[in-house]
Amino acid sequence: MANEITTADFDAIVAASDKPVLVDFWASWCGPCRALGPIVEQIGEEMADRLAVYKCNVDDEGALAQRFGIMSIPTLILFKGGEAVHTMVGSVPKATLVAELEAHI
Image (tube, rainbow, N blue to C red):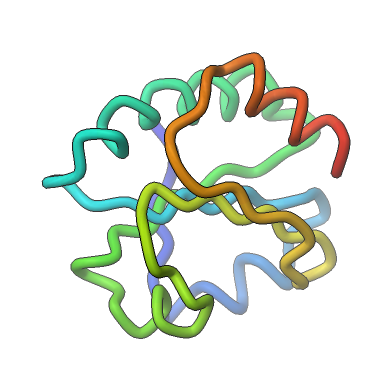
């Protein structure tokens, strides 16, 4: 399972990571989020050598969602060197998500 990330530990985790970090902004009541969740988990396992994956519950971490301008969920943001480099909004097929990640990591 992907690790949860919070407002308190976000900067330390993302800035300290030696590989790109994918953050899944989601909520338990969001159907598309629940559909995308297992796909994000699979990618996290399959690409673990090249990518760190975290989940951020927007209901619990409103400040973090606001910081990154999350207007709809699910939203996936890829960070490299502590900076957001790519954003994907909405539930997408696994192949599409993998292709987008491959293009940016």
